[in-house]
Image 1: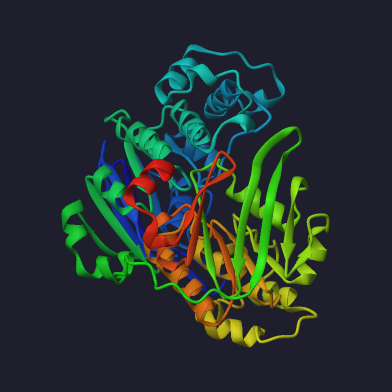
Image 2 (image 1 turned 180 degrees about the horizontal axis):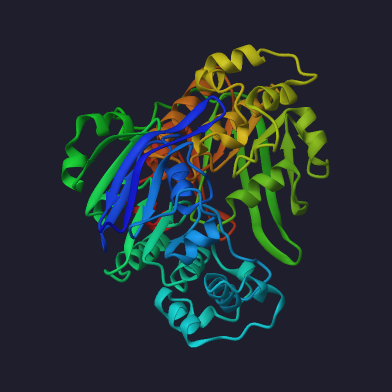
Length: 484
C-alpha cells in the first residue's frame, strides 16, 4: 500500500489550469522531492493533497484511504502533517504553547485555544528534536527566521504524521540557517514519509530518493536524483541557460542621485544602522549585500522614509529629504519594490498596474510595462494573489516603474524564487539598466547581485564594512562578510 497516491488530479482557478492530470505514488518512508520553476503548480499540489483545495478532478489517497475533498483538519488527523511557505505560528504565544496547541488540534481539541495549555512530554521531546528546547519560553515573534522554520517543523512533528509535506523550508534562510534546517530535515525519522518542495536544486537532489518535476501543472519527469540531474528537459526548464559569472564592465559614473551621510536608524530604542554612508549615481545598479539581520531592509526603509532617522541625513537629487514623509519622497522620484511583493487582495494584475500608473506621465506606461513583462500581459486578468512568486515579483517591479521614478529601491527581489526566476529577475534589472534606470538593490543572492551591479556595499551589524566594484570583491572578502 502506498503512503500517498495522487490519481489524475487537475485544479483550475477560473480559466487558469494550475494542475493538469497529475499522478504520483509515494512509498512508505520515501523521501520525495517535487521541483520545478515558479508557477509550476508545486504549492497547489500540496494544498490539494492536504485538503486546503478541492481538486477539480482526480483523487488523492492517504494510506489507502481516499481523502479527496475532505477538510484539511480531518486530513491532518488521518496522518498528514504540513509546513507552509510563510510562518503559520501564533506570534503572541510562547514557543512551547504553539507546539502544544498544534498537538491539541491534531487530537481534535481545537477548543483548547481558549483554555490553559500545559507542557506535555511530547511537546518537550519535539522541541528537543528540532533544537528549540532552550527557546521554549520565548515569544514566537522574537524568534529568528530560521528558528521560526524550526518551530513550524516542530508543530508538524508533534502531530505524529505518517506523511509530512515540507513547502520550501529553506526559503529566505542565511547560509548557517540553511545548513541547520537542512540537517534537521535529513535527520527526520526514516519511517516517516516526507515530500519536499524546494527551489534549492542541489539540496532537493541530496534529500530525495525520487524526484517529481512539474512544469505548467504537468509532470514532465520523474526518477532518481541523478537521472533528473542529467535530464536535458529538466535542465532547460528548471535551471535555464547558463549566465555569465563575470560582472558586467563598469559604466561611466553619472551625476549623483542619492547619498546617505552618517545615517543611523532602528526600531524604538534599538539602533540597527550606525554611520552609514553610500551614494548612487545616475544609471547605476548598486548592490547592498550582507547576511540576514545586518540592516539591508532597515536601510531601504530609512531611505524611503518608512523609518525615522536617528542620526545623519539623506540627500536625493541634491535635496535633503531625511525629514520628509514617504509620500513626499515618492513624489520626488523614489520608488520601493518591497520585500514580500505585497499584492492587493481582490485586484487582478491589470488593476494593480492601473492603480500604480494613475496620474503618472512618462515613458513607463502600462503598454510599455506589459511589453517588458510579457508574462504579465498573459496574466493581466488573473488575481494578483493567485500568481506564482516570480510573477508577483514582476508585478511589484512593474508597479514601481509605472511611477516613473528617478531611483528604484529593490528589497530582496529574488527571495524564495527558483533559479530560473532568479535569472529572469537579473535580466529585468539588466533591461532597466539599459533603459537608463537607477537601482539600489538589497539582495541575499550574492552571485546574482554581483552579476548585475556596477558597485557594491557590504553591511555588517548596521555599518558599511566594504565597498567597491564586483570584480574587486575577492573570495576572502565574500567569505569574511557573507559566509560564501
